[in-house]
Image 1 (spheres, rainbow, N blue to C red):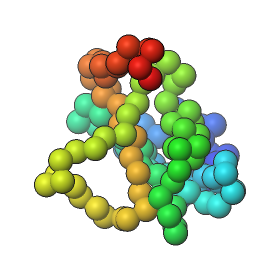
Image 2: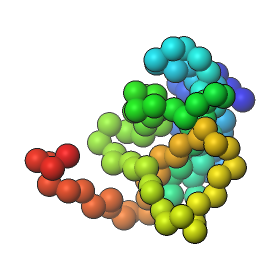
Image 3: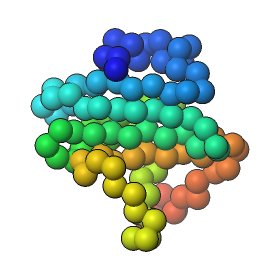
Length: 110
């Protein structure tokens, strides 16, 4: 598990295998466990807190650390029968990395 200082070398070091990081929350500085992975057409980042789910400012912070400014990424709400819950306080960010674009609603609706 690496700390925040290691993110500076993320692009050069992480490769196709991903990595795990302890990142201080921008809300209360408590550690967030972040796991990044790349493969099968997707970039994926999971964000966990020990005693609660990450909130919007924390997820936005992680998104900005692991994705470029112009990239669109998403959290998904899949059908209940597809839920896999390995940790109750984890949220995920996804982005296709195989050239597919995430469709967006018109800006006035966001």
